[in-house]
Image (cartoon, rainbow, N blue to C red; front, side, top):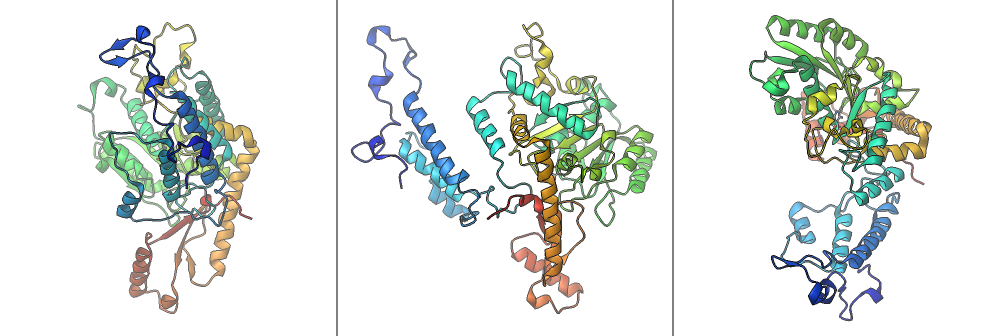
Length: 492
Ligand SMILES: Cc1ncc(COP(=O)(O)O)c(C=O)c1O
């Protein structure tokens, strides 16, 4: 079905507005500026047609995505296997462009076969639901297309970022600090690893890795996999990531950490960083930050807290005790795009240091961009703290949602997610065929589904082998994993 009104279609039924008529393109013959066979003073694009296309596409997004987001009768996903989906979408890129009605049809197909992450029944790992304010913020930034490196290009968004970082720093409990929004918690962890190493040996920026002792870092066995990636990417090496044992709830055991640090020192390695996790990815565990901070202080180690997932609890007066001691961290990763629903991607890397360490570590002082003699205060050109050049104004999504809901509204969002977790746990306990793995600390609820055929069987090796097989066949990991973070909206 075409979404175009009839009056906008050509008599043959096709929409001809996408094609630009030669009369429109060509200026009068005597005014033409022709270089290398290109008319430079003709329109580069058909503006009217482009505007109309945006208008129609926005209407389509409103109808097919936004208004259907809360409709429980809609499908979460119209699943197709890859080969069939390739055929349905006709992905090949050709020499000639297509008219707008065809493009709108394509947009409709993309929506149709995409997973509706806004749907009330989307229960994937990391995020869910629709925050209308951050969505509008995303529309705005897509339309304005700013790049957050210098104040002259992004005056509003740089100030917004500063305001959001300041508030997040306040919630961590630091008096002051610094930070940068970046494309993900994984990247924040990489920022932290590199910054801690720079603090340990500032010469590394110029001299590189040669001549350094064997640097070693410590994190829990339940940490996010980005620790390994960062260590390999930064030339530290995955063998120099020491995975400290966790207790039965998935929390790092401080005595084990102490033991490993001492052993590493004895072996002549150079410990430089401990990465604690506040809200582990699978179990939702919170490492004991105060005890870990004591060890870091004793050994002069940088303490980074990966609160990508658990950081949201800082917004809740009821639950922020989970991150007790976070103010003692040197750096923190916190993703508002997870439980706070700020839209992917919205991730902050925050640093306690206020001596410009972040900038000293990352800056390259490109003279074409970061001139020091501009007509405004160049300390607002914060882009050189980033590993990126072009950078999206991700803080704005969070800012608009925060403005709309207030701190109290965000707090309620967190409280609600955790209340939903409690509810789910009680339901699991009540229902036959479900086995809770442990009482959750946060919004991760790990449980087994035991099918009727296994319910009378004793829990021996055969039972577990069969259960694993079933979980795998059902297309999921052995440990079924869900979180209430994915269900923070109600349906009527
Ligand atoms: C604890 C933790 N750290 C880091 C990350 C990575 O965050 P991102 O997906 O934004 O890279 C995740 C993602 O789930 C996480 O759970």
